[in-house]
Length: 392
Image 1 (spheres, helix red, strand yellow):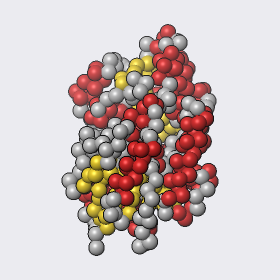
Image 2 (cartoon, rainbow, N blue to C red):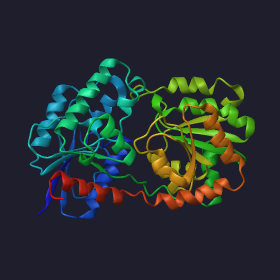
Image 3 (tube, rainbow, N blue to C red):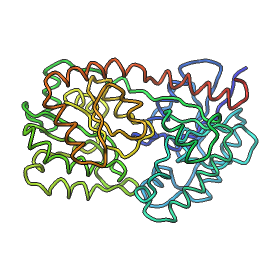
Image 4 (tube, rainbow, N blue to C red):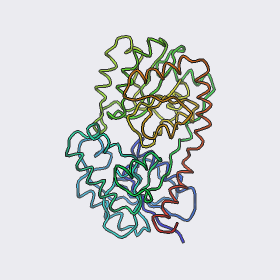
């Protein structure tokens, strides 16, 4: 008997983060043909392609989740009700939210599974929310999501521990899945393509590139990375920092202005720091392959997808020693205390200065990357579906 799963598609068109997780997981689920069928519940007609075999129900909300996440305002209660009615009307056997961020209550007895990626909002509310009221609203929604969910899904053992300890969810109610990398992220050995990738971003042939990929919310700790550059350059004058991500300031309470101001403080360092803005997956994969390392200075992560994308390119990761990053990166990089600028700089200096270390860690990265796939994520998520339904 086929099991019908209704999936919240509010984040479907987000370019990375929760959108990437939702799109990649749904595509992997749909390809398995293992006794499930899926309907995506969207606030607006999806702009990005929906996998073959996945139905779509458009609720017709006034404000999309993308607009709400820009910081211009939260989704209104009427939109939440519209989505709730659409989900309840599916007649699904199970309802699944790939991110608690876009959760809305559904008043039905249909079993519900909610994915909570991390506890960053609870751990760093002063870095995540512009006002205390925003935090209180988040707490209310998060509590309601946990109350309605029969089970909780998350993306790492580190997050599972955090959810149990900080959100007081029984550990036996929590399932763990994983994430993977798009097929674009693979090793690149063609010198001509590597040279073109570097030239596209103004990187000289002699530059040794450290790359950051991700958002610019305060807990991402990118300012600390910028502040480490003068120390790094003092030891490695050919180092260059390339920062990849949206710099329009359109995301919820990011600190792009602070980052650009920090990058211009030191005249010498400012010439060695560049912001690319958003780039395509193919461009990012080439840039990562041309880099000495990905630098991931976050104060906390629930998973850390850019680390896996870098490892698939054979690129080591210089990572914070907090949250999920040690679990994900393992022996494919070096770790540092994200609150100590000298510790971050020291990890970069060691990678750039120790003969053979980059090559050794690059091989370890390729070997480790293959354990993180969207196929594995789909299999683990299906198991969580069955547990939520009481069939496993």
